[in-house]
Amino acid sequence: MMSERRPLILGNWKMNTLPEEGRLVARQMVPMIRDGLHLRVDWGLALPFTHLSALRAELEGWGMMGGQDCSAHLQGAYTGEISAAMLAAMHCTFSLVGHSERRTHHQETSATCGLKIDRLRDQGLMAVYCVGETLEDRQRGNFSKIITSQLMDALGSRIQSLDSNGLVIAYEPVWAIGTGLTASPEQANEVHAMIRYWVVQHGGAMLAEQIRILYGGSVNASNAKDLLGCSDVDGALVGGASLKARDFTDIVLSSVG
Ligand code: 13P
Image (cartoon, rainbow, N blue to C red; front, side):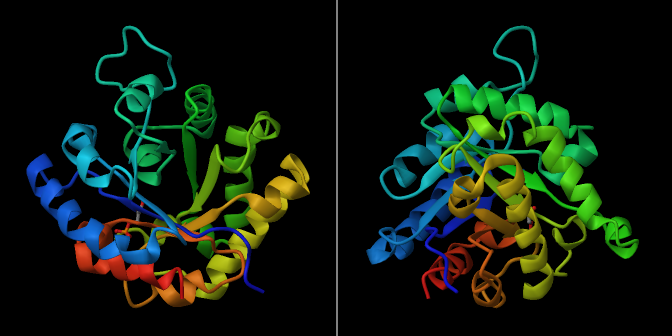
């Protein structure tokens, strides 16, 4: 059954390109995506903070622009951090939260992610909360326990105050990120259905019906269509392939058939 949820395709550029290179990629990408498609799909790029001002004019009116992280704090003595209000002031409309690379390299916990989601909500920005298990967790058959605790610790106490404009969940199995290994459509859909069921239980049936759950992990122009064809997969969070204008355009195109 095709869902009524509007597809959402987000690129995550991570720490790649210099601003001017990034602007050239966006300049190629936007016209390719824009011709008719923008009416049926939401898409955007999570950029390095340094790129926001250079890419704003390229994306404005066509694609969403977002950060890859934001501070759990409002403002103050937090050297190196960027607040949700700063993202909003740069015309971002969303931010990633809890990407596995932040959990691994910056010891970010799900509880901290919950505070970041609060900051984004207060600014009217959409939080794209990333969850996912490691290879070890998957091999041990532990993945549902890990993902449930990531959901519970970040969202459990606040999901009732969020709606589908303010929250997107991204399932990114750590073993599939940047490895060329992709979850099969069946594996992805199984976890997405489990996440949606968690939302039914904690946020209610209406939110569960409306919330978009994205898949991320080695999504490319060849495998996107099968993944996006799954009933509970509402879009993709794309790393490497989002840096290539043609490939990312093809992924966006696959989401609308
Ligand atoms: P890749 O698409 O490069 O595997 O990265 C996925 C990712 O981490 C997106 O956030």
